[in-house]
Image 1 (tube, rainbow, N blue to C red):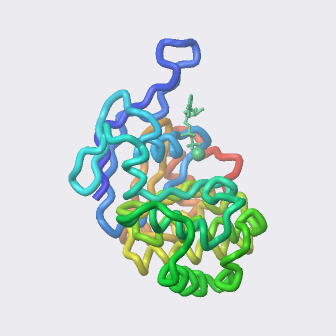
Image 2 (image 1 turned 30 degrees about the vertical axis):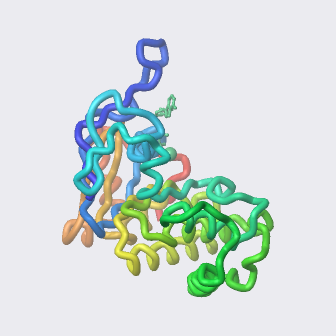
Length: 264
Ligand SMILES: Nc1ncnc2c1ncn2[C@@H]1O[C@H](COP(=O)(O)OP(=O)(O)O)[C@@H](O)[C@H]1O
Ligand SMILES: [Mg+2]
């Protein structure tokens, strides 16, 4: 379980550009919960992920995972239990290494034993089996350098790297936003399959309002560094995109504003 209490992050403290990106934010995510997150530009969505991963220390508040307070645990140590996929397909993988080498590095990073990128026979079989389930033909390209793959294929490899050993928490930050619609659809379907099969706890930031309501079992709306809406169950089943926009406006007095947001 992920538990964030009273998280506050102020950038440029005391300067003319001081900005409070997280404002006493509280959030609990139970094991196996898959929550989508939407919100205006600058609402603090990526900052929330940075706080969870330990990219910086909070000014106030705490983060705990599985009952352990990780507020002051360094980023590289949290990374063993937290997987993260960014919007940019270039970020998750090493372009000059092959698919198999990237996966092997990710696999050895999260298991015991020495770090390596030359896959063992057993690893190769595992990677081939998992890649085959993607339906992208990547299982036949394990010796291809990742830099030669399309953005969507790279995101698929990154997803597998983050989940080959199931993380305690998977964070997806608009990981399909840079892909064309058909590929985005594929990677989203793949995401859903992996989260379900591995029973992962997952937070997914998306600019697509429709996927925010369809994927997972809970939707969070962020605004000005806080979670302002949190819907699940029956209430979420009844929710539509226009209704969500209306509720947001009533709540915050403004329209949900995101230049990348897809309304349908
Ligand atoms: N490292 C940083 N230094 C200064 N300001 C930052 C930094 N990271 C984020 N911010 C600011 O915090 C606010 C929230 O950013 P972010 O979390 O990236 O928003 P989003 O919801 O669009 O992901 C924005 O105003 C952004 O400019
Ligand atoms: Mg962001």
